[in-house]
Length: 211
Image 1 (cartoon, rainbow, N blue to C red):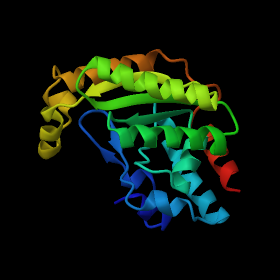
Image 2: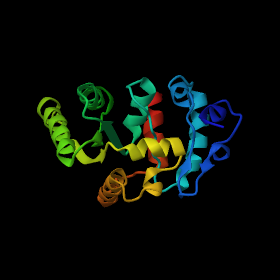
Image 3: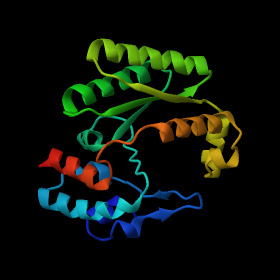
Image 4: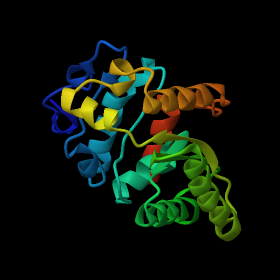
């Protein structure tokens, strides 16, 4: 089951949650996120009531995927923190800047914590170089501060874990990508939480953007 079953009122949010052995729970999105952008006010209120059942979670991560569709921007505007993931490829760097520009100039009307993560790098220096380039351009042309949260190595262990359907951080905890993830988690844990954070505040901001 996935988010579409909740939107169509065939399942509750709690009924579609998938438990894992790693202490993390998943909700499959399917086409649900794109559907949310076109919900009526009443349908959105009904969805919000279901979403509020996730209030006991410590952290909620919404993977919006690539692109800047309306539904993605609505989630971004309501989030406590936004993580932009890019790679060293020139097109990816351009896309990352484009997304940050839209977020900071057209979507968000309040301060938001923007973080940058560089994925699939071949060295720490490459990750730092790419991040500095984007952060400098954003600061110079948009006047906005973006924090560099870290990098993840490009490594065959990642693809192997996809095939095995097991997280590489569990299967190969000492691999370069796994160590990178642990460092990123450490940095996130040290950041100060946003004021008035949580599911209720997220929904308040999200619904405010829709009505």
